[in-house]
Image 1 (tube, rainbow, N blue to C red):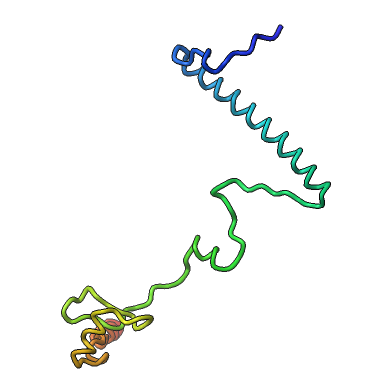
Image 2 (cartoon, rainbow, N blue to C red; image 1 turned 90 degrees about the vertical axis):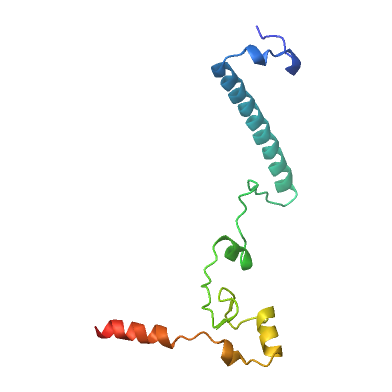
Length: 134
């Protein structure tokens, strides 16, 4: 004989053991999954009768369609080597692409040229050539 249905408030959750709580959670998940499956099937059949196909995607796991969405997942662009360096603050560099940084604009306004801000690569090339000759 079936048990009388309980209200959620009637459940004595505090006195259930860990294993009993896991079983309750598992039964609840199974019941929810069963309801979801049956309702989804009903909706798919209704949509099919109207000439539509229904696909479901779990939230947070959408697959990117095409174009820029794919680039957000895995950015394969390479970093651009800096071409100019601020002589007052060597940590400030610029690759020469895009808008000029404020420090470049300030230097140019004071009469400096971009050639004055170029990073000297001659020492790097000479040392690598010397290492190859050895």
